[in-house]
Amino acid sequence: MAAAAAGIGADVQLEYIRQALRSFNSNFYQTPGRFNFLDVDGRHVVMDYCHNVAGLESMADFVGRLGAPRSIGMISMPGDRKDSDIKTFGELAARTFNELVIREDTNRRGRKDGEIAELLRQSALGVGMADDNIHIQLEEMDAARTAIDRAERDDLVVLLVDKPAMIWQELEKRASLRGQLL
Image 1: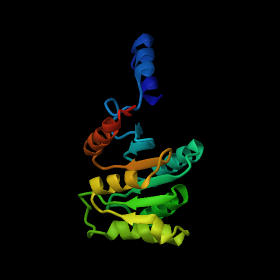
Image 2 (image 1 turned 90 degrees about the vertical axis):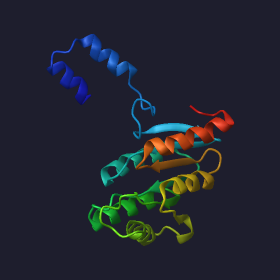
Image 3 (image 1 turned 120 degrees about the vertical axis):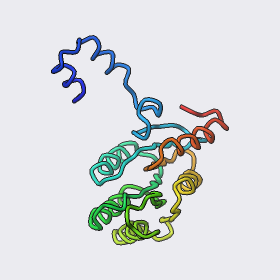
């Protein structure tokens, strides 16, 4: 809507603005890494580059409204965030998802390998998530595969990604094996 308002302010013809709004969607090819949705062998998969607490709050609202039987979140945060923000993110993720798969970005932005994952794990444990519902796979592709493999038919899998093109390619490959790409 902000873009539409900016278009109006820049005196763009109203019909062009209408057409842009009509044709916009959140598929991977139009908005890679922004709430891309597909079905992988009966599992509902959402891929998003959610990397802060405000983004996760919005995702949590969606997860709650969807009402899937179970939800699995693949999570991480950039290493240049404050420990308190990482802790808040981990707590919210634990309250949002039934299971967590924790990964780390390739560029940890000054953090040691495993440091971000451990902060997230401790935060999830601190709000009551069982340790056996938390899985650490530091590498993003391995984490995405783990999250999907842990899900059952009709479950929701939310993949918070750093490399959307790489993950989308894997998702398409898995979905097309069953002919279920949305």
